[in-house]
Length: 332
Figure 1 (cartoon, rainbow, N blue to C red):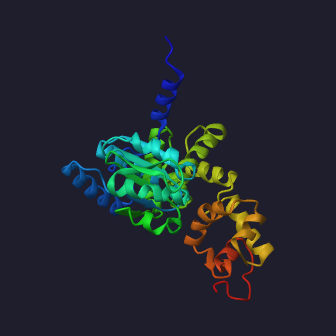
Figure 2 (spheres, helix red, strand yellow):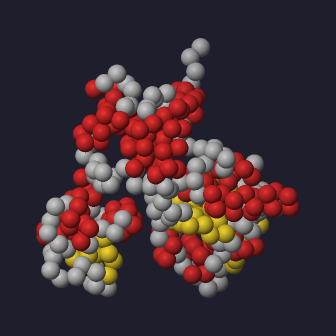
């Protein structure tokens, strides 16, 4: 008898999942991993839930993967939600169905509504949920006991969390970009999982253009695998990797067409400096996407400065795109 479609999908997902499953498999972030190991071993030794954890960093650095690894290392269940989709009713349903020491992962937790954040205060501190019965000033508050769970929140913008909510996370971990060497190790691992033959020099080139981001590294590897399958014999040599990266318009710093469009628009249309709203409208992109996806890496490599007067392209950005830097200072 044929297997159910969902079972086949799950098997396919497991077979081709590129995410590490344990802290030992997780590449890089050694200090972060050691910190987590200590907290996890201590909690397991006391047979208690972990303290609530806030994971902070740009997209693609492994926040979701770390949350799943924490559940695996704790031997706990794992449930997930997305911050902007959570309302008070959803919160009550989720929290009352959690089991002891289970991990509740909330992505984009900074986009959780303020009143939902406030509803989490007693849940995080006292493991109870205050449910109002009735409406208005005469409404009764019924405290509902909860299992001792761990909230793991992921955010790209820690400053948007309410202060009292943020302070209730006992463990705060900041994730930074990976080194090219760490990315190369990850590419080697992913290529073996995908049964892709790739030369070491090609691995190094992909790592160099992955912007210190594991998600981008995985996506690049899959793109170049497809290119090598169609245009070559399926083996990713250094030459094939170079051809593929040029074909997909990924330059030597890892910038793609969207990055270059952002910088060209900033330079050509606004003289190298403007506000977030103006640049978002000009490139037809959401302001949040600009601030959380486009800009962090451009800032890291020194191409963009955030100033009281808005975004400013640096001399490095001008030179990279072949423009003459302006006479006035680009840092102000």
